[in-house]
Image (cartoon, rainbow, N blue to C red; front, side, top):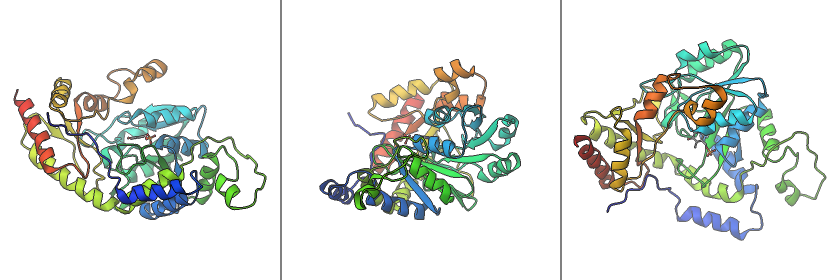
Length: 376
Ligand SMILES: *Cc1c(COP(=O)(O)O)cnc(C)c1O
């Protein structure tokens, strides 16, 4: 049977050679490679500072902590995301408050946010779903009106922009993931970027227990006693992860172009397939083309899911909404019907294979399988 992987990373021989150099050196943890990656990544995003971390979850968590958000506070976010987004709010001790999404894009519906704002609300975490940015201008207006912080979850959207605004362009912090299936990856990894230099300094401390001198400083300079001004975590990116990422970052535009072509092909091939809907790419958007999702007819998703897998096709479901996960139901009393648009997407969505090395023949195999199964 044919096997079409859901995802394949794009690590090449040069990346492996770079990791080799780190492995043959004495210094494996946070040091020069991390610094180089952070500098290049900041340049790519167009912000002054990037701090390399172990995950996007860590980036979201530290953003909330550094912005002073915690117990008794509420943070508004989308139910249509990976649970990490809302879990980070729990880690900070605050309460996640969900608002529903747009039917066309699956992104947080900016029109619905205002009704959820009260005097405990401190921040909004928009998630740029599948690689398309939320309406950041509207979200910025709301944040200004109610004095809220904005922390972007750009786990899908390193390459994205909208209305001429890049990810991180008009927010307080922007969080990235280099998890195994993301556009560029180090297996596990993440980063937070910001234009606020003081905030970046706080992130550097918080990622390493809140101490004021990292191992690299202790190694390259003479030992000096360190202090711990803040209670921090163990979230620092290491040189091995950074070495894997530097080359991928240099190739990121070319990798995007390949996914963009495949995306266009999927859209063209599926346009006339009755019963299948795709989400919309809005005008003035550079879509990061992270996840290609289809909406199946109601009640048919799980059947299709199994049928495609039986034909050797790797798939994923992004996402069943967070508010209906057991912990969120039990703890906050969320229930079916609370966010109908997110629930509808959650019941109907399937993500298809999409990555630069996906061959056109493989994509066509997926399309034919989908056509066959829809006609059954
Ligand atoms: C992958 C993902 C995360 C979590 O990223 P980690 O690096 O695994 O912590 C957060 N938000 C979204 C939308 C994601 O897809």
